[in-house]
Image (spheres, rainbow, N blue to C red):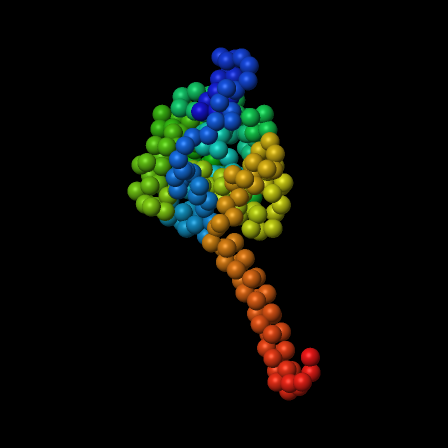
Length: 238
């Protein structure tokens, strides 16, 4: 709801402050909202899907663009090294990005560049990078998910937002600071990235953390056993 009011303010339909900015919905978020795809899951997804779903998911996974921003991409926004985020498409409306920070550029890694170049050879006649069936407007990603993605991935499909959260989490797990992930996701501040996009409860991070604990406990146990052996040899030494 807050996002809707913010968008209305940017369009000039509402003046003043956002009246629901601090409001929060009751209840808990569902799994789709909180999920973050791992790199292994992304690789599996790209292996399973056909085109254009494969390239769309690759853009989502390796650029962190929002669903509306992916729909808004045109070939003029792609320079092979960068994806320039200049617009967003919601339903049939072409408008500005969610925030001023969102209107920025994202580096294109080599695997994504190859997929985009191949996609351009197949579909480069359209203005839109991902064109709809009629070629005159942007592809509807929810329809793509419904018809071409979910039937193949089944329960392992967790929605488009899972890619954005996944990129932030995967970068963090690779040692990238939250401040850098913030720049890539184009958030206004790093705290937003930390609080809402770093899924620190992911299996790999929990496993790594417990392994560190196990090593620490192992060293402590080793020291304790050494002390017991010394006391057994010198029972009167304190």
